[in-house]
Amino acid sequence: MRYFIVDDDAGIRSMLMDIIEDEGLGDIAGEAEDGAHVHAELLELHKVDVLLIDLLMPQQDGIETVRALAGRFTGKIVMISQIESKHMIGEAYSLGIEYYITKPINRLEILSVLRLVEERLRMQQSIADIQRTLQGLSGLQSGERKQPQAPDKTIATSGHFLLSEMGMIGEAGSRDLLDMLEYLELLETDEHKLSPYTFPSLKDIFQNVAQRKLGQDATAADVTKEVKAAEQRVRRAIFQTLSHVVSLGLTDYTHPKFENYASKFFDFTEIRKKMLELQNNVEPSLSQTRINTKKFVQVLYLEAKRMLH
Image (cartoon, rainbow, N blue to C red):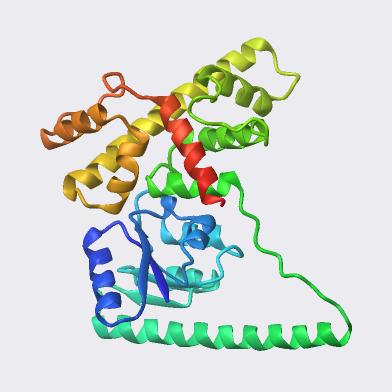
């Protein structure tokens, strides 16, 4: 069983992880501090079986998140909250959650609920296996040979996962970056492989993405305006992501996200500078931070592409 925990309280996330790991209920596939960082593609890539999610969170609450996942996440959802409103609990159940647990967390209740969820998942899996077997036998009897189709993976899916891991999906510039990935994928062919040495200029990328977004009838002035707006959105998003990743490393140098993404996506001098700012409670400033947008886009594309293979 693989669990993903979403709660803006780090202490609650830690307690749930301890219960799951201590009792051998399964593995922790991931965690997030807000529903804005959770989406179906992320849960699919992490192969999540059970989503544990808080109701009240600052950016996107549990109800909104569960509603966005409807029909796209096939695992089970357990909602945990201090809210005991019958209306809210009823709405949560109507959206398809499996159980609603009220805080403060009771270890025995958590164990009981998660074991029931595990039992239901195993039962569903057994039924699905039987159905596949019967379908296979039916196909053999009729002489058919159907090949199972693997779910499609796209560069945008991989990019979405990476941006979510770095805490960027809530930022406006994340959509621009995903558009860039799709453009770069179209640009690349078997004869023309993109690498840091053959990458198009940042100006060309922004220009072409803006043209694709606005359509061929857009005026040069409209394209220029969109390019400038997109550049600002992307810069702000990268700046916020740098702050997020560095804050993880400041707390724990061995944090997997800090180790995986800090040096890959950002310049070491800026990482060190941002750490000193956070340590000294200096108000972060975008204008005083060197944002290497081209490096970020290059690494994002190459990493997203690598995940597809």
